[in-house]
Length: 539
Image (cartoon, rainbow, N blue to C red; front, side, top):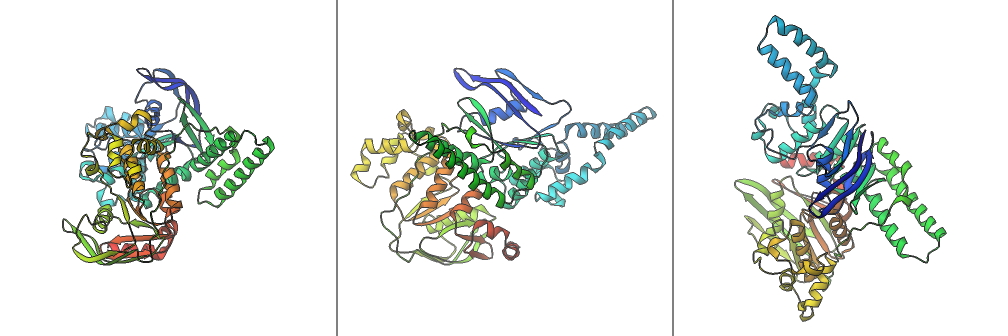
């Protein structure tokens, strides 16, 4: 279907890819993973023809059509929504445009040409193009009244959905998507997961959303050591098996027979989990091809995120009584009553992300509510990761050692040796620990903020979209840490896997009050009674 031969990419002295050869076959979905800066997006640009490699070739089978999810949200601003979607099939749109232009300048001479083009157009199912595009838009939450609106009049989230419709339109042979779940709500992501899981052609996707990768991928393409290796299975299989491979490599004295038994047990356990999943039957076939012996220990570094507590909280955690908040005339939430229990791990959700951030800002004392009150238990200590962390990095001249020293709790923690060791565990090793805080990337800032939280040793953790800007390795480490944390957690996240594996309770803030359920995240979203209640609370 699509092949890459002897691909090399070099920027100055830095070698991104070195003589890479691989194939992407029909019916498979490949999740491209790699550490930040490994070249995931560059690779997608090269195979889609938007960037030339230093050497090597990319070959798409003759007669096959490739579609790429556009990253430019302003490229189609002057076009109506429906037309933007149809433009996803460039050949079909070209013929449609030719027919329209010939009709506009109609003559006997043009009539024959129109007839020829209409035959081709019909073979391409062109007469159903508008209705197919409209159906796809509706499935992605773009209502009929917006179909003839100009793209520039849509908000950012709506544009993303239209561009996804454009990429999916016309059943492309190869579909390339870079972070397709950004700015989508859980319901839309679920629709996209189901669509791709049942898609019969080839999909190549880069994503930091582990639930999405697990739901759609039949293969993982790992960028490591300037090479790309394809492995059968989804992300979780790759992660767990690479961890197992690393563990087995460290067990030099263990008998080959015992290692083999361990591998077989791993395959058996994983196969049972896949069989219970909601994936489409076509995607379950991946289990037949699993070969853990091909998995190699990864060079990836995982930060050591461990949340300890100075003391255990008592029974009184947080009481919220009648809390309300408006923003620019819009009711974010109203009359919120909540009583948190010891050890609760709560996924806080809302259709309006401002509502969650405002709620966190209020209960951490950074903002005032319009009405109502709240009180923390006297034995509680809170540590908060806000959505916007810019205020913590305003004194940009501080290096990371001095920045972290601000949050040390003891004299020992103020020592440079301790701080550098701490930062080393958070992947700021050697000279990186002396970086100025004003030159940090988004992901590095979040790792610093998590370091600050760890030093506080609080028994209540409040995290507002903690996975933003993080790579898969940091997300995985943070996820595992919150599962193991013995205190209380309030978390808002667009990472489905996070919410499902950490939370035992879901609290939804709405303009008409609060929905509060002890439930897993998946059960909450799928419960028909809750669905009905949610619609009424936002109506």
